[in-house]
Length: 355
Image (cartoon, rainbow, N blue to C red; front, side, top):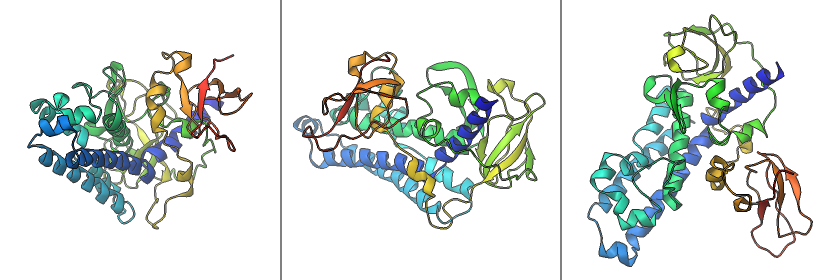
């Protein structure tokens, strides 16, 4: 019973994280970093880029700026409009990854373009978790895109955005979150450790059970709803925006979905007062270690080297050469500490086994 309560609490907090301004802002920031690096190479090209200069570069740059503009407008509207069902789709509209790894990128053969190779592009496959592994600005762009997919699953309810496969697992298609899809993989969805390991304050049920919606009915209030079906007393909490349609619910494949009654347990009134909630200060976006987390079990021990201040990707013993007798035990999700008063510069912790 304790595990069920804990998972319920974590699921609620994860829905709040993945629908938050801070989560969307991180996506925007990484997209903006990519556009800045693209522009920098455009204005100050390497010799190889200059010798193979493509007249489409300026057009591509404008497409990327347009995608950024939509996201920027949506972030501003979160503080102004109560109609989040109009704000989120604006943020989702278009996307830089879709240009580079979609039909346009294929037609222009961007994978062979020296500018995109310099940005870190390694082949036509835009999958973050499979070889060839992209690097640099392209890798960050793919992380931002994967985060965007998580946000879409969280706030949408239709098949267009809310249906998905788990990374590397194509046996089942899901719609919205279930306890299985949310917690089956350690490394996905991203930044789960912020909630699972660091933000475990129990959720206080506000007793909003007077607002209940059935499958195929319109959501009257933006917030987090808890489902029940004929054979499930309380399923995984999910986030819905006002004006969208309540879906069916399943703990497994979408084809096993059943009609559900959705009960409002948390109303989302964030940002309308012009402020960001205090709890969002606890969100740590450990971008550097995402690839390491995804493949931690496959990596040799000596390759796990994590910068201080980042989240520990694997439970066990860690040490740093910046301090003698530094070997100590950290749990996955804890923050690896900084070492003060040392001459090493940036401090890195190295994994040293589980015993």
